[in-house]
Image 1 (cartoon, one colour):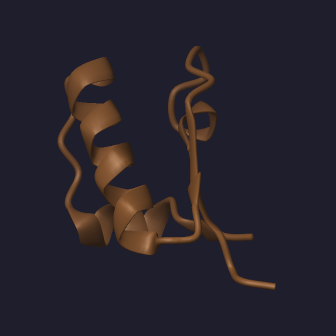
Image 2 (tube, rainbow, N blue to C red):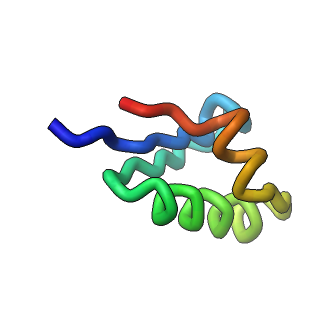
Length: 57
């Protein structure tokens, strides 16, 4: 079974239930960056998301 990459906004912002999960790591990071910028006004680098928030499930 292929790995999936998950970023869970709820763990960062308790009032947000947004979750990204994809078998494509690049896609998961891009979607999470877009959500954080548009939904929360915060910018994260790919490396920040990968190292601090990305889960392999």
